[in-house]
Length: 310
Image (cartoon, rainbow, N blue to C red):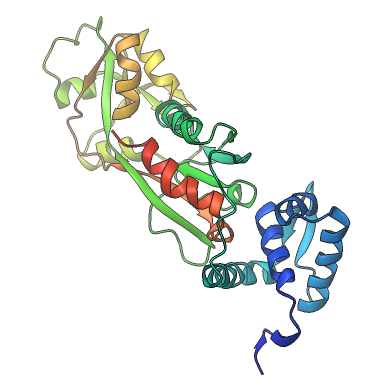
Protein backbone atom coordinates (compact mmCIF):
# COMPACT_ATOMS: atom_id res chain seq x y z
CA UNK A 1 0.00 0.00 0.00
CA UNK A 2 1.41 3.39 -1.02
CA UNK A 3 2.03 6.08 1.60
CA UNK A 4 3.29 9.67 1.27
CA UNK A 5 5.24 10.51 4.42
CA UNK A 6 2.86 8.40 6.47
CA UNK A 7 -0.30 9.41 4.55
CA UNK A 8 -2.40 6.58 3.15
CA UNK A 9 -2.79 7.52 -0.52
CA UNK A 10 -5.96 5.44 -0.88
CA UNK A 11 -7.66 7.70 1.59
CA UNK A 12 -6.29 10.93 0.10
CA UNK A 13 -8.79 13.28 -1.57
CA UNK A 14 -7.27 14.81 -4.73
CA UNK A 15 -9.09 18.07 -3.95
CA UNK A 16 -6.89 18.40 -0.88
CA UNK A 17 -3.80 18.53 -3.09
CA UNK A 18 -5.38 21.07 -5.43
CA UNK A 19 -6.22 23.20 -2.40
CA UNK A 20 -2.71 22.79 -1.03
CA UNK A 21 -1.26 23.98 -4.37
CA UNK A 22 -3.54 27.03 -4.31
CA UNK A 23 -2.45 27.88 -0.76
CA UNK A 24 1.23 27.50 -1.64
CA UNK A 25 0.83 29.91 -4.56
CA UNK A 26 -1.47 32.49 -2.99
CA UNK A 27 -0.28 32.39 0.66
CA UNK A 28 -3.77 33.36 1.83
CA UNK A 29 -7.03 31.51 2.39
CA UNK A 30 -9.10 34.06 0.45
CA UNK A 31 -6.67 34.06 -2.51
CA UNK A 32 -6.50 30.27 -2.54
CA UNK A 33 -10.31 30.11 -2.45
CA UNK A 34 -10.53 32.30 -5.56
CA UNK A 35 -7.88 30.27 -7.37
CA UNK A 36 -9.54 26.95 -6.49
CA UNK A 37 -13.04 28.38 -7.13
CA UNK A 38 -14.23 27.64 -3.63
CA UNK A 39 -15.91 29.73 -0.99
CA UNK A 40 -13.66 31.02 1.77
CA UNK A 41 -15.33 28.81 4.42
CA UNK A 42 -14.83 25.79 2.15
CA UNK A 43 -11.13 26.64 1.75
CA UNK A 44 -10.77 27.08 5.52
CA UNK A 45 -12.34 23.64 5.98
CA UNK A 46 -9.99 22.20 3.35
CA UNK A 47 -6.99 23.66 5.18
CA UNK A 48 -8.18 22.04 8.41
CA UNK A 49 -8.42 18.69 6.60
CA UNK A 50 -4.94 19.17 5.13
CA UNK A 51 -3.51 19.81 8.58
CA UNK A 52 -5.15 16.70 9.95
CA UNK A 53 -4.07 14.57 6.99
CA UNK A 54 -0.42 15.59 7.13
CA UNK A 55 -0.20 16.06 10.88
CA UNK A 56 1.32 19.51 10.50
CA UNK A 57 0.03 23.14 10.58
CA UNK A 58 1.36 23.54 6.99
CA UNK A 59 0.57 27.29 6.94
CA UNK A 60 0.97 29.75 9.79
CA UNK A 61 -0.09 33.37 10.03
CA UNK A 62 2.73 35.83 9.24
CA UNK A 63 1.35 39.35 9.10
CA UNK A 64 -1.44 39.37 6.52
CA UNK A 65 -0.16 36.26 4.75
CA UNK A 66 0.14 32.56 5.45
CA UNK A 67 3.75 31.34 5.64
CA UNK A 68 4.37 27.68 4.77
CA UNK A 69 6.01 25.50 7.40
CA UNK A 70 9.08 23.42 6.61
CA UNK A 71 6.79 20.43 5.97
CA UNK A 72 4.75 22.45 3.46
CA UNK A 73 7.90 23.59 1.68
CA UNK A 74 9.02 19.98 1.34
CA UNK A 75 5.65 18.98 -0.10
CA UNK A 76 5.26 21.90 -2.52
CA UNK A 77 7.42 20.72 -5.41
CA UNK A 78 6.38 17.02 -5.48
CA UNK A 79 2.67 17.82 -5.11
CA UNK A 80 2.88 20.45 -7.86
CA UNK A 81 4.68 18.00 -10.15
CA UNK A 82 2.19 15.22 -9.39
CA UNK A 83 -0.79 17.44 -10.16
CA UNK A 84 0.82 18.52 -13.41
CA UNK A 85 1.25 14.89 -14.47
CA UNK A 86 -2.41 14.22 -13.68
CA UNK A 87 -3.52 17.30 -15.65
CA UNK A 88 -1.51 16.20 -18.67
CA UNK A 89 -2.84 12.66 -18.40
CA UNK A 90 -6.47 13.77 -18.50
CA UNK A 91 -5.72 16.54 -21.02
CA UNK A 92 -7.01 19.29 -18.80
CA UNK A 93 -7.18 22.53 -20.73
CA UNK A 94 -4.95 25.27 -19.32
CA UNK A 95 -6.91 27.61 -17.13
CA UNK A 96 -4.76 30.58 -18.16
CA UNK A 97 -5.70 32.61 -21.24
CA UNK A 98 -3.51 35.73 -21.58
CA UNK A 99 -6.08 37.68 -23.61
CA UNK A 100 -8.68 37.45 -20.84
CA UNK A 101 -6.55 36.87 -17.72
CA UNK A 102 -6.98 39.30 -14.85
CA UNK A 103 -3.71 38.65 -12.99
CA UNK A 104 -1.25 40.78 -11.04
CA UNK A 105 2.43 39.80 -11.08
CA UNK A 106 4.69 41.13 -8.33
CA UNK A 107 8.35 41.57 -9.28
CA UNK A 108 11.20 42.50 -6.96
CA UNK A 109 13.87 44.29 -8.98
CA UNK A 110 16.35 47.17 -9.24
CA UNK A 111 16.24 50.72 -10.56
CA UNK A 112 18.38 49.55 -13.50
CA UNK A 113 15.74 47.02 -14.58
CA UNK A 114 12.97 49.60 -14.12
CA UNK A 115 14.64 51.86 -16.69
CA UNK A 116 16.14 49.31 -19.09
CA UNK A 117 13.79 46.31 -19.04
CA UNK A 118 10.45 47.36 -17.55
CA UNK A 119 9.23 49.57 -20.46
CA UNK A 120 9.56 46.77 -23.02
CA UNK A 121 8.30 44.18 -20.54
CA UNK A 122 5.18 46.27 -19.95
CA UNK A 123 4.60 46.65 -23.70
CA UNK A 124 4.96 42.90 -24.16
CA UNK A 125 2.45 42.17 -21.39
CA UNK A 126 -0.15 44.70 -22.52
CA UNK A 127 0.05 43.61 -26.16
CA UNK A 128 -0.96 40.06 -25.25
CA UNK A 129 -2.75 40.44 -21.92
CA UNK A 130 -4.45 43.85 -21.54
CA UNK A 131 -5.95 43.07 -18.12
CA UNK A 132 -2.69 41.90 -16.54
CA UNK A 133 -1.11 44.28 -14.01
CA UNK A 134 2.43 44.50 -12.64
CA UNK A 135 3.56 45.49 -9.16
CA UNK A 136 7.23 46.39 -8.83
CA UNK A 137 9.01 46.13 -5.49
CA UNK A 138 12.53 47.12 -4.52
CA UNK A 139 15.18 44.48 -4.03
CA UNK A 140 17.03 44.70 -0.73
CA UNK A 141 20.32 43.65 -2.29
CA UNK A 142 21.76 43.63 -5.80
CA UNK A 143 23.79 40.41 -6.03
CA UNK A 144 22.32 38.43 -3.13
CA UNK A 145 19.88 35.64 -4.00
CA UNK A 146 16.49 37.11 -3.00
CA UNK A 147 15.10 34.31 -0.83
CA UNK A 148 13.08 36.64 1.40
CA UNK A 149 11.61 38.63 -1.50
CA UNK A 150 10.44 35.48 -3.25
CA UNK A 151 8.47 34.51 -0.18
CA UNK A 152 6.02 37.29 -1.12
CA UNK A 153 6.76 38.07 -4.80
CA UNK A 154 6.19 36.08 -7.98
CA UNK A 155 9.59 36.93 -9.44
CA UNK A 156 12.89 38.63 -8.71
CA UNK A 157 14.77 40.26 -11.56
CA UNK A 158 18.38 41.20 -10.98
CA UNK A 159 22.06 40.41 -11.28
CA UNK A 160 21.89 37.03 -9.58
CA UNK A 161 24.62 34.50 -10.37
CA UNK A 162 23.48 31.18 -11.80
CA UNK A 163 23.28 28.34 -10.95
CA UNK A 164 21.36 29.21 -7.81
CA UNK A 165 22.49 27.71 -4.50
CA UNK A 166 21.01 24.23 -3.94
CA UNK A 167 18.45 23.83 -1.22
CA UNK A 168 16.98 27.35 -1.53
CA UNK A 169 13.87 26.09 -3.33
CA UNK A 170 14.42 28.55 -6.19
CA UNK A 171 14.55 28.25 -9.96
CA UNK A 172 15.95 30.77 -12.40
CA UNK A 173 16.89 31.57 -15.97
CA UNK A 174 19.44 33.97 -17.47
CA UNK A 175 17.88 36.73 -19.59
CA UNK A 176 20.86 38.79 -20.75
CA UNK A 177 24.49 39.64 -20.14
CA UNK A 178 25.51 43.20 -19.40
CA UNK A 179 28.91 44.86 -19.42
CA UNK A 180 30.12 48.10 -17.86
CA UNK A 181 31.14 51.26 -19.71
CA UNK A 182 32.28 54.71 -18.67
CA UNK A 183 30.25 57.88 -19.24
CA UNK A 184 31.26 61.55 -19.15
CA UNK A 185 29.53 64.73 -20.22
CA UNK A 186 30.15 65.73 -23.84
CA UNK A 187 31.13 69.14 -22.42
CA UNK A 188 33.90 67.54 -20.35
CA UNK A 189 37.45 68.71 -21.22
CA UNK A 190 38.38 65.05 -21.93
CA UNK A 191 35.31 64.32 -24.05
CA UNK A 192 37.27 64.56 -27.33
CA UNK A 193 40.51 63.02 -26.06
CA UNK A 194 41.73 59.47 -26.30
CA UNK A 195 40.55 57.67 -23.17
CA UNK A 196 43.06 55.33 -21.60
CA UNK A 197 44.06 54.13 -18.15
CA UNK A 198 45.85 57.40 -17.29
CA UNK A 199 42.72 59.45 -18.02
CA UNK A 200 40.53 56.90 -16.25
CA UNK A 201 42.59 57.11 -13.05
CA UNK A 202 42.92 60.91 -13.17
CA UNK A 203 39.15 61.52 -13.01
CA UNK A 204 36.98 61.54 -9.93
CA UNK A 205 34.52 58.66 -10.05
CA UNK A 206 30.90 58.36 -9.02
CA UNK A 207 30.58 55.15 -7.08
CA UNK A 208 27.36 53.18 -6.52
CA UNK A 209 27.13 51.61 -3.10
CA UNK A 210 23.90 49.76 -2.34
CA UNK A 211 25.26 48.35 0.91
CA UNK A 212 28.48 48.05 2.86
CA UNK A 213 29.85 45.52 0.40
CA UNK A 214 33.51 46.48 0.08
CA UNK A 215 35.16 47.98 -3.01
CA UNK A 216 32.70 46.40 -5.47
CA UNK A 217 33.33 45.12 -8.99
CA UNK A 218 35.00 48.28 -10.28
CA UNK A 219 37.13 48.75 -7.17
CA UNK A 220 38.21 45.10 -7.32
CA UNK A 221 39.21 45.44 -10.99
CA UNK A 222 41.31 48.56 -10.25
CA UNK A 223 42.97 46.93 -7.24
CA UNK A 224 43.95 43.94 -9.39
CA UNK A 225 46.07 46.18 -11.60
CA UNK A 226 47.68 47.82 -8.57
CA UNK A 227 45.84 51.15 -8.53
CA UNK A 228 43.23 52.98 -6.50
CA UNK A 229 40.50 55.17 -7.90
CA UNK A 230 39.50 58.64 -6.81
CA UNK A 231 35.91 58.60 -5.61
CA UNK A 232 34.29 62.02 -5.62
CA UNK A 233 30.72 60.93 -4.89
CA UNK A 234 29.00 57.83 -3.51
CA UNK A 235 25.32 57.30 -4.31
CA UNK A 236 22.88 54.48 -3.45
CA UNK A 237 21.16 54.31 -6.85
CA UNK A 238 22.58 53.27 -10.21
CA UNK A 239 20.07 55.26 -12.29
CA UNK A 240 21.11 58.60 -10.79
CA UNK A 241 24.69 58.22 -12.03
CA UNK A 242 24.07 59.36 -15.65
CA UNK A 243 22.19 62.45 -14.46
CA UNK A 244 24.95 63.39 -12.02
CA UNK A 245 27.62 62.73 -14.63
CA UNK A 246 25.88 65.03 -17.09
CA UNK A 247 26.15 67.94 -14.64
CA UNK A 248 29.68 67.38 -13.36
CA UNK A 249 33.20 66.59 -14.49
CA UNK A 250 33.15 63.19 -12.84
CA UNK A 251 33.23 59.77 -14.50
CA UNK A 252 30.28 57.46 -14.17
CA UNK A 253 30.52 53.70 -14.66
CA UNK A 254 27.25 52.02 -15.58
CA UNK A 255 25.91 49.04 -17.55
CA UNK A 256 25.93 49.60 -21.33
CA UNK A 257 22.15 49.36 -21.82
CA UNK A 258 21.56 52.06 -19.22
CA UNK A 259 24.18 54.28 -20.85
CA UNK A 260 22.57 53.83 -24.27
CA UNK A 261 19.11 54.56 -22.89
CA UNK A 262 20.05 57.87 -21.23
CA UNK A 263 23.10 59.23 -23.08
CA UNK A 264 21.25 60.86 -26.04
CA UNK A 265 18.97 62.96 -23.83
CA UNK A 266 21.66 63.80 -21.25
CA UNK A 267 24.49 64.59 -23.66
CA UNK A 268 26.90 61.89 -22.53
CA UNK A 269 29.82 60.21 -24.24
CA UNK A 270 30.11 56.46 -23.77
CA UNK A 271 33.66 55.21 -23.15
CA UNK A 272 35.19 51.76 -23.23
CA UNK A 273 36.81 51.00 -19.88
CA UNK A 274 40.61 50.53 -19.99
CA UNK A 275 40.51 47.53 -17.66
CA UNK A 276 38.82 44.16 -17.39
CA UNK A 277 35.53 44.22 -15.48
CA UNK A 278 33.54 40.96 -15.46
CA UNK A 279 30.12 41.17 -17.13
CA UNK A 280 26.91 40.74 -15.17
CA UNK A 281 24.11 38.27 -15.84
CA UNK A 282 20.54 39.55 -15.50
CA UNK A 283 18.46 36.64 -14.21
CA UNK A 284 14.78 36.00 -13.59
CA UNK A 285 14.29 33.94 -10.42
CA UNK A 286 11.17 32.39 -8.87
CA UNK A 287 10.19 30.01 -6.10
CA UNK A 288 9.72 26.39 -7.16
CA UNK A 289 6.17 26.41 -5.75
CA UNK A 290 5.19 28.34 -8.92
CA UNK A 291 6.85 25.90 -11.30
CA UNK A 292 3.64 24.25 -12.55
CA UNK A 293 1.42 27.35 -12.50
CA UNK A 294 0.22 28.19 -16.05
CA UNK A 295 0.05 31.97 -15.55
CA UNK A 296 3.50 31.97 -14.02
CA UNK A 297 4.92 29.82 -16.80
CA UNK A 298 3.51 32.16 -19.47
CA UNK A 299 5.32 35.12 -17.91
CA UNK A 300 8.70 33.46 -17.48
CA UNK A 301 8.71 31.57 -20.82
CA UNK A 302 7.13 34.19 -23.09
CA UNK A 303 7.02 37.66 -21.54
CA UNK A 304 10.46 37.89 -19.95
CA UNK A 305 12.50 36.50 -22.91
CA UNK A 306 10.65 38.72 -25.40
CA UNK A 307 11.11 41.79 -23.22
CA UNK A 308 14.92 41.59 -23.40
CA UNK A 309 15.35 40.80 -27.08
CA UNK A 310 17.37 43.45 -28.98
